[in-house]
Length: 184
Image (cartoon, rainbow, N blue to C red; front, side, top):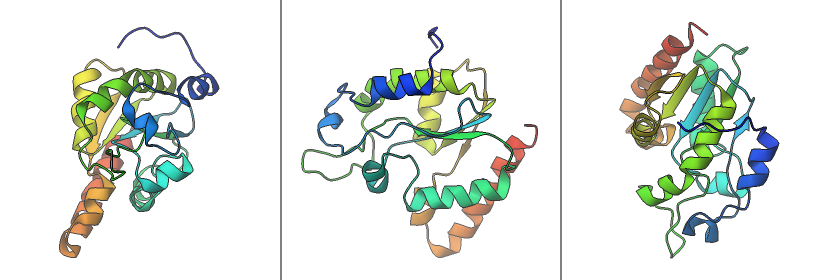
């Protein structure tokens, strides 16, 4: 990770709120940067904003966010400082306005400098990669990060599972988060 000067979240927000680094800037309602406490002990990094996040400008604000909150509340001690962000800060819509389920690599690469700043500002002891795509990109781009990391199921994935599989996926996520945060 390149050396970045110490930055406050207010500066970060001002810098990225009008980002035009990729064509998603033309299709978003709001830039979705982060929420939580900075610096933090645990930084959750998801994939991309959804419809609710695009309207509110807050990560994990929709149905998947509510499920993530329930799992975090059940597993991470309340006194642990947490923050939430995504690989990309704009909803990945195509030209017709439909949300893309698979985030194209070009958008992730365009948003990588913002994510690097966020990780640097956060100073997390643990990074929680929310979903396979987040884990893939964090492994590729932050191999020598100062934080430990763990991958969990993306709550949107859990919500799409058959009812008979949801409970097990939720329980596995809670156990993974509890194990990863017990030393914090």
